[in-house]
Length: 502
Image (cartoon, rainbow, N blue to C red; front, side):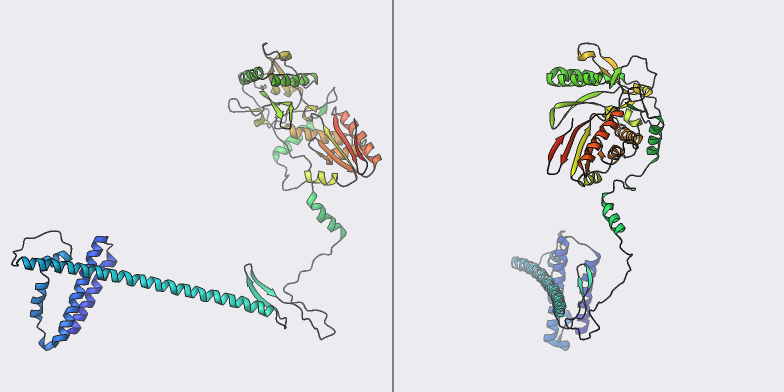
């Protein structure tokens, strides 16, 4: 019978475990389940004790059942399972029995709380034991790693000089050397060979190529030629010419000749804003008017007398910008990116390939020889004119003689503008075209213009004073052929000081 009781106890425990696995009860239900299980196990223990005390022959199951029924009456069982429905049961107990019943209920609840607390403590002990075990294993691993490193370093100092392998953060490495004492007279050294690769013979030419590769002006990857670049070069090459004023004249390199909307109203609105700004700032007005008078005086702009063809005209707003390092010097910039009806002049212009010399190469050649020459092309963009048929795309509004109270008149630019997307490419192309036209007559100047100019700044060095003088004269004559003015000309000779040419 004892075996049946133990089997029944096992079945009860399994039942409670299955309930916990299959259901995710709330905290209140879990507490009641723990209480019920604790009381049930307590009853099973009591039954086994009674059976062991009396023996199988003397154990009276019916008597024990009656005694347990007295301990666990209906209200007691209901409190264990958490029932909240009170059923009227005829009471045969006196006030004293009611008090005993209340004590019994409280004792059962305390027993359940004690069992739950013990389970919590046991689980905490298990977690703490597992944590300590994990820490112990980590310490053993660290000790093994340190011991292995110590062994490897110790072998490196051994006297046998045999190669050995060591694993680092970058991977495995082979470490070894030659013995300090070599007994054989035929052996002068030992090499632990891993791989062999035969290199091509090293010649002076290959060394020079390797050194010069860092200073190449062109990079085929970075300066690849696109179809737009080819169209740009073809357009300029076919239409560049020298006009009657000896200026090089180039067309506006359009992607396709556009039909533009009439944006004159936009130009007038921007001009009214500019007028208010000029009236508020007298210095700004004086500088602006002086710059515009210089444009007309130099022949960079002209009155637009003719009636333009519809779609072949564009009015460009303009604004004044001061140089951050020269607060008294103003430059009027034409806003070719101003949009009207969803389009702008720059949207239709080709920028062309990058014809600018590499700054690294220019500076390295500049430091090559003891005599240095520096110069600058004055107003480089304005020295290259625009074809007559393209000038109506460069119209702008301005007051005659700078009189703000008069009606604005229509003008048009004759030169390539600061602010046009195509102007840098056209100016660079014009410079190199001018050099190529005179490379036989003035070889020094032609090479200087082609290789030693970075945009409009020229930097070059030569070995002798005579060469420097001849170079400067040739450069001035070549630029004069294209009506370009070379100024800020400085000649610096090592140990002899600075010379400024007019």
